[in-house]
Image (cartoon, rainbow, N blue to C red; front, side, top):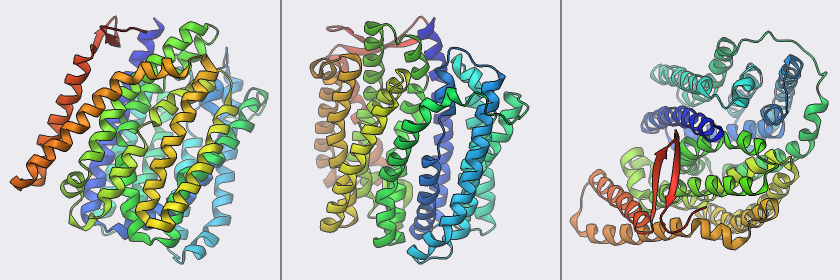
Length: 482
């Protein structure tokens, strides 16, 4: 029953995120054809400031409430109050830093962009806390309606702004409209009368310290490269880098991340059963990497074709960023599964420690790469840091659930082998097609289709295939089972 609920919840989340990312992707293509890399660079620079403040002041209301044995209205009131206080803090902090941040970057346009972008995290914090009751029961239909409705509203408003000559403000509107619309719609889908109270603050306090510290470090880690390029690389380079980064994470954000979101609640329900928890984690990690490996490799191997077909000639130079960044996010789903496991086991300090390591390793690698190879070195530095962090993820999983390195690698080796066959086949095919001078779109279709077939055939040859039974998706292995 639990597995079926997880599967159904993941289905709604994947559908909502897939449709949302499809709308985002379509919006990005339209914007990229009309706006310039410098427009994207300006918005990315302002957004980096907002994202850092948003992440630093993140309050784990959902995570804290999911793991509680019982939730009543007083918990919801406390969650809403914390969200409202967070919104006030975000507004005050961004008001304080917007002008200095603009002066450092030498562009006064950054100030109004930051102040408008701030509406997005404030709106998310004011959404109805009643939604948590459905999350706890692994019911994500409302999440589907919120995600899809918000994205459609954002697309329409952004397109209108673009057609009216708003320029880069269309990017700002697209970022802000979805959470504002979603917050308003949440009270229709999960009725709740706002009330201010902190009577249940102690139920959140255990999460606040480590979680806030982890978010602070993660914010610095994920925005460090963009701030570095914004200061010394120029807005055009930052624009190309930011768009490449957005494209590189689309598979993990639209498919894998949503599919893994319900597993925290599932892990929390079986955390006292060591063997069952271990099997559940390994299955979740295996499924996530089954999708992540071909997506990341496929983007890296066809980055030049993707840029030429989707973005156009003025985005030339972004293909190198896209290739390196797509490889650097390949292990992100493994961390997402580990993240859910850590919170389910009430071990937020582990996330803080990993984020601290990531910040130290990535900042050093990115700075060294930038000094030696410029913007390309920044992307290469992220790839080096990601490879090192992958080893740390494997080690921490072993500590949490007593899954040694051999069992984790055995869990993934067939996926790695299929990925290697796919990469070799695609490289050989592209070499043979080079002399034919095919249109970029035709070459992309041939290469992408061939790569997908090679990957699927390699998995089948290893005895691995996907089956649907009892209302859930299973990875079946003819020779070896978990």
